[in-house]
Length: 575
Ligand code: ATP
Ligand code: MG
Image 1: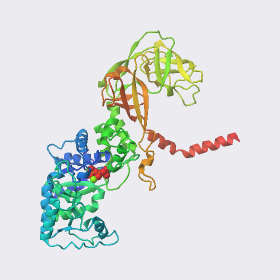
Image 2: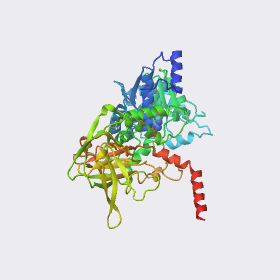
Image 3: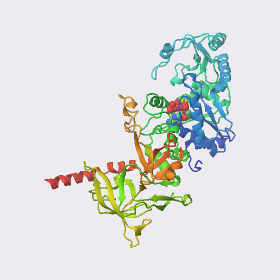
Image 4: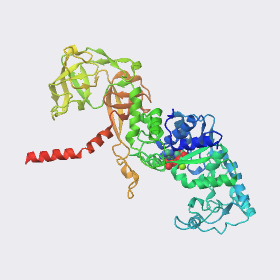
């Protein structure tokens, strides 16, 4: 799966390690999610990177839940995360771990640091601890409790563990350097008291290790070689190293890369949980969410997500990847794999006046022009059809080549038709077209070689099934919804991110489709059957449109000079 030629600074580091023999040629990574939300596309990048590197070097990758904060963690998230990693196509074998499995060992390591005089119990209040910490420009101050004797620290830490203290009354801190230029090194907290049951360890613990005290040692216990994390942890690396060096245990290498950000969405779980809780979306797996569960429901394939992650690459520079890049990869994948069907979303009735009433013909239709093995199917043609309303114009402008009064167009897999009459209601709205067909053009070609400029999709009104279509637009109207200092990101939620069209008309071929089945509705978009479908009615989610809308927008915005000129020309001619 990973492209061997696709090297990056991380593979360079690993190659150097393999050359120097630092890890004896071993490569063992891990993906360490905190079970406090669903995984998003940013996590997918980390998953592809960690599992991909293990695969590339014939190594291993563990799945480890970083469940050190019992207050925010739920079983629902653990289940969703394992499902998502598996769905993406990765296998952790029997190496599913929890940081909480190491609570006993971590406790012993903390005791060891106290014993050697490198940790102490501090009884400053949380507010005081913050005040004493100093700032980026000022050094911190040492706590009056810092030089307690070892025996006193051991006794107090034991009391913390036994639940003698309340939350906030005492913490265990590493004794490092309150004057360090790196705030993470100013006697960081190792353990705090939390009066919360843990989903896995229950009431056993009243104290819980901080992320920094748990992560490196968990890596060490699992004999991870390369602990890959995002750039925010660069300043934590000295602390990662300090703990391992001072506890004197096996020492993995932490490596940081730039996290993935995507335009028109938000990624932090803190924000995603708000979108769910405040009802902006229907749930974590809402097809508009950037979560793996949302993308899956939207119709994305694991392959497309993996290709996207590979294409984005790994670097040290922060940036935002345009959403259209993700869409490009799902389009590429579905173009190869999705069976084509005809569906009409915005119907206009067409009556073929010279077609025998009651006659039905079965037309051969190609299931996938990109995949001959997908074969053909039969599509029923009859006197009354629906075509797309957009495919007809009564007064077509110069560049409109589709159906218009008096004009001939091809119905895909069927006949040439010519529009003879436009039927309107009392208000002047077009309700129906009358057309004639040329029986000699069956299959879509004229024996006399005459050509038409447009091929339209259609369904037979009698045969089509009705379904619901959910059309999605970006969840946010802004490219960077988090960038506004004065407004909360929710101010930019797109009010039109979901449009429900019910009914749409689809050829009956899809009738037996099940949730997760993907189709291309010819000339429209890729769609996937949603799990909300019932025996009576299918519900389709629009995965992605066929054409790259974004490129169209770009092209337009790159042509201001021309349109200005045109406007000027217009003004002159009017003068
Ligand atoms: P969030 O800020 O979205 O809550 P997190 O870093 O707190 O993310 P974790 O569950 O701790 O979420 O992340 C698990 C792993 O995924 C970590 O190694 C983290 O660095 C990585 N990760 C998280 N977000 C991204 C991202 N946007 N791009 C790449 N990797 C990410
Ligand atoms: Mg985190």
